[in-house]
Image (cartoon, rainbow, N blue to C red; front, side, top):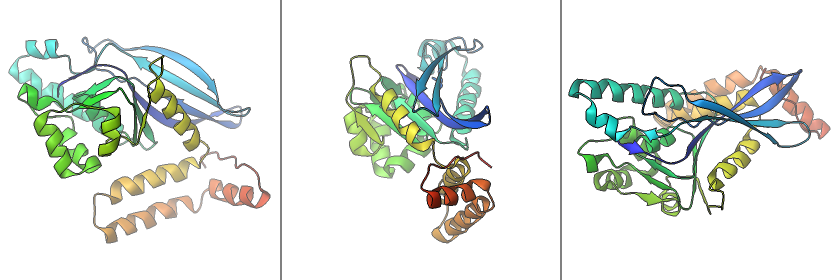
Length: 266
């Protein structure tokens, strides 16, 4: 896993109760491996208003670097490299296994481990000037935190081989053409175009039934790894989980009464 620098926002959408209402929240951690891994990143918070009823909270876990620090790696003993990469792989796998939707907003560079982290998200948004690539072969290593497995699943085997074999770096526009990102947006003067677009997308996701969204993600993630017949059985099992929920009844009532549903994740 090679170094990655720049701005990589990993978004998690979730819901928390606030004064009987369910506030729609977006947690946006900037997950960086810092040079001193024992130090915890600083946390800052920004508040956004989506409408008169819902607040979106964006929380940053900010750091200095995204990906492995190459100067630090150069000082590692050979027997230290494997455990270091294993921990990184476990962290990214934990992100991949989150039950809530995740959005990676890439406004700078996501190289090596940074891109592997973004690949573990459900949706990726990049600015046109963003730089992405699995560059490990340039350093005589291979992606070690899931890149060889997740990239082929996103863009196809042949294209993934080409990008990994050549250690090629692509910008946001090319990444969109390859299917590496869902959206590519023109960068703005403040350098946060992807971040803002991710916030807009999160606002689209947040009003939907939270249990339904989680079950949809589970059905997709598990179903894509098996044959169609087994996948349909997985879908059936996930569908069965939403039938007895209060949210499902609320959705039907809201549709009948032509009003906005008020989901509570129950």
